[in-house]
Image (cartoon, rainbow, N blue to C red; front, side, top):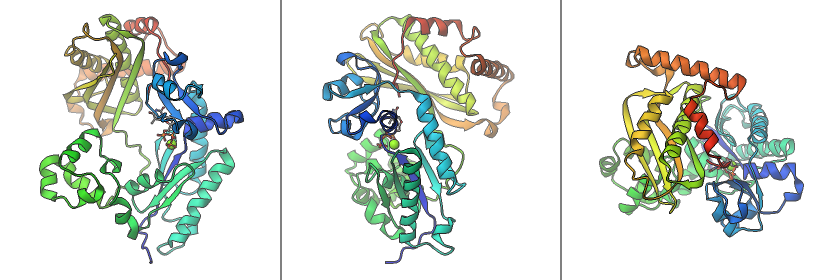
Length: 410
Ligand code: TTP
Ligand code: MG
């Protein structure tokens, strides 16, 4: 059957990325369960798994799992502490290869990107055939593996959301092509959780409505969906129908910026917890300023020693990127918890509802805030140039001295 490809969108996602790079650098690891993350310390380690090789996944080890759980599941695994710089180098090399195929690239994360290859010469001038699309996909995979030694999984369809689901479909070393006339049949049997934009909360609400598969969602009344989810309702329906016109744009779509840390010992000491909070607020605000972003919603995340996890958030009247403001708000959120009852294992701060600096009406942003922002930006520049400097908040430094932070926090 002839498929009319209006656009050809590819989602590239590297396989077990950090673990694959480690294996490349040390071929003895090939075929073994490799776990990249915090030190396991014989099962007593804190912090989390960054990623695991597919051999380790057979034991149930997954990203973001506590390293102690990974150790219980796979005590004979090979545990490696992540070395960020090397992964970033490979990430850049992969991006350079992809840039040879199209200028329309959107990098999504360190090992993931969207490509719009609609105009590629291999696809011809008219609407391309699925065979031509497949040949181009194989060619890209081949270039990546021959030049880096790493395998990628590709999903190809005529929209970003379907391409993204498809790249995950036959991992590792996969190539999944969903031609336009196959989109609905491809999506229908999938659990709704696989759709882009369906997070835990939406998933729970959908489950309560008895909606499990994409097909269930597609058959649901649009009016009721809008009643339950507001503006998100029509969006969900479009995702379920595979309708997604969003362009592949060079600008990264950052939805939120967050940092979290696992204490090396569960904490009840309020002073240590709040100074860690200040350090996290500072890291988050530095990232916001780096990306020229500000956010309106501040979120605090707490995990207690029994692994119960809570989030609290507050939405501000105007968006911010200031350490002081993010810290003050998250500290108020922290006060909603009785910290002396249960020790804290993990604490995190996030900022969402982001706006770009250039989209912001400056009148919303009073003179004092502007002055403060300029100061913080100068501090960022000094930090970048000279590393941690005496200009950092004294309290942050004190906090850093007091606690040691595990690597591998997501
Ligand atoms: P992913 O692409 O989510 O995972 P992956 O490449 O390891 O495995 P897959 O084959 O399933 O794609 O993330 C890319 C890298 O980002 C991953 O190798 C390590 C890092 N990462 C973390 O550090 N913490 C996390 O929780 C996740 C999900 C990823
Ligand atoms: Mg990956």
